Image (cartoon, rainbow, N blue to C red; front, side, top):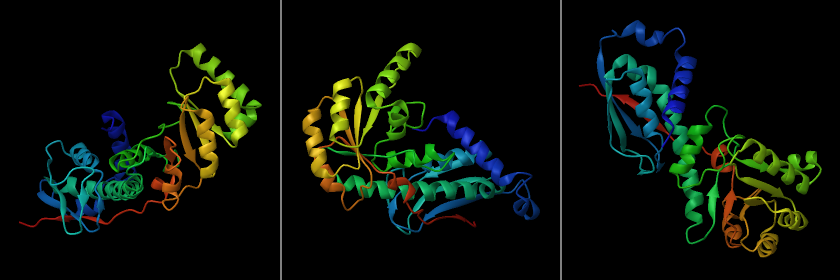
Length: 283
């Protein structure tokens, strides 16, 4: 579930960006006392995401909004179905319409693409991870859409996990120095953060195994055959993650290695928004 305070902060900021001095199109032609009802129409097949967000947006604008879901997040959806009905002040419906659609269309696209990747991994030990390749200030909802689609969220940001990537390692003077410095830093500050280290070849893997003190080893741009060799060296001591240029067409080849996770930024940044529409119900 989304953090309520973070979601409210997002809604406040997004509506401020859109409405600013007022929704003059609505205020010019519709009395503020008018009440109305609308329905969210589904126009493409996929996986539905963003229902919780939609309800929160309308209720942020009008606490007396009546939100009636016909589906829930994660449900398969078909063109022609309806996701929800909403009854509120007409000003609320029109001011919230575009933000609701922007969020739900984007989230449903991500959930749908993630679901395709997850389906490819059925029967394998490997699970799909997202990355930080997200839209600024929209990451929370993009990662929620990955979760709804059946994927696993990697770290949310720079603050909730240590990931020592190639630049960290190079600037530190090597893997051993980077890990040793990190362990001392976390201990000094009493930060219970997991550590992941990126490796670029089998020699890097051997160095991580020698220094230890980490939670996960990333195998970056490894061919599947080299992942098999790396997993034999690691022998279950640490979690493993394959990353770098893995597509839906090569996904199973990597899953067959037995790696714990595959991280794919494309499930977010290559996702295409799905077509949804909010339509007034005229009684």
